[in-house]
Length: 147
Image: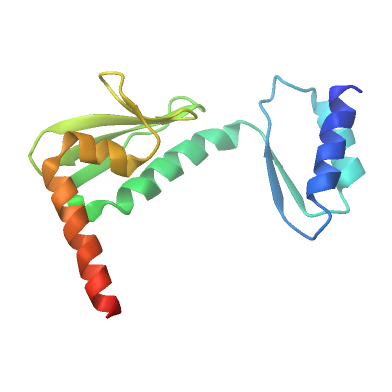
């Protein structure tokens, strides 16, 4: 079984219902002709085929979204203009004052010293005790609001 048939069988298996599926495939991995052939075979479904150009905006948007959800515990942040389709970088000023560089890749969130974290919350907790306290206070306030 070649890659085209394997991918097609996976797509058919996962798309029996009327779902919108996003497939992100690097442009050099498969030829445009091959991708068009697959698209025609499955075009009765609602598909969105994307090239890796959308990956740059994915990492950029994901990092921006993740940091925007943490504004209670950071002083400020600024996501840099994407330079690579495989990562996004932001300058984050923590409540203690220093500015740190955070990079998001397919392997997680990275600090400039090489530490890697699965979640932005874990990264911020490791570098900022004030963030950890603010996060704890925010969670406690939300729990109090439920009562």
